[in-house]
Image 1 (cartoon, rainbow, N blue to C red):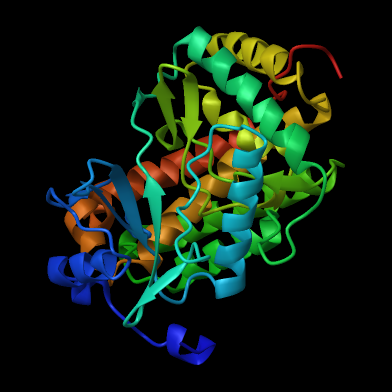
Image 2: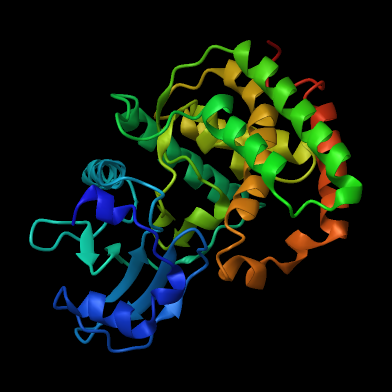
Length: 333
């Protein structure tokens, strides 16, 4: 398959259960159970048990999103982490390949690591996650990705703002105010970002609690689809929840565990609110960009309502105010 073929327009509606099964069986792996869809919208991800009793997760990559080189670099990073005994779900290698093709589709197979949901208010689990994120970063500081993106306001925020400016999903009554709030938020987070120096490194990139499973042996990390270069705090700040007092306690536990394996520059804490603002912009732009995928109106019907955009307008204004507040910290700068 050529790169030109891979970037042709295909639609997930063509990814039928029969095609999924045929793709899996092309690897000489035969599902014994049905396909259980997992909580993924950017890609299509299913869990199953094969006839030998092993549980797998199969992931079909969204066409046109990543190049072959970017996906393979993600896989290579995953293999390196697994070799370093960091609990990450690494793709299965069959016939020397981790990225497989069936008709127009690219897909990968992963072992199902099981486990229960990560508890964001459980300090023991936060401590365990901090230890393994520290180990991950201890290893990943050694080099940078060559094919993956660099996480900056320009690479993530500029396309998001442009997407919001062009979408027709924002109600006309709110459009001017919404775009003004988004632009103000983006300009301010850019300004804050520029004033902070940090060492860029390889990151998981999207380490929110949904990408951590708690197993009898501690945390297991999944889904390196958004692996990128950027500041270490990107892999930490989404572990924090609740009010400022709660977040301060969680941060103390998280960083103490993290720093047993990897040093952390506390100046990066000043990036937490800019990163939150960037994620808010990106999330709304992502939904708007994917709205022609039938799964999105079905699972996010509130996104096209006026009430949602009123809430987002208020959320953008409040986040803009947070950028003026003192950053979360454990010690004075």
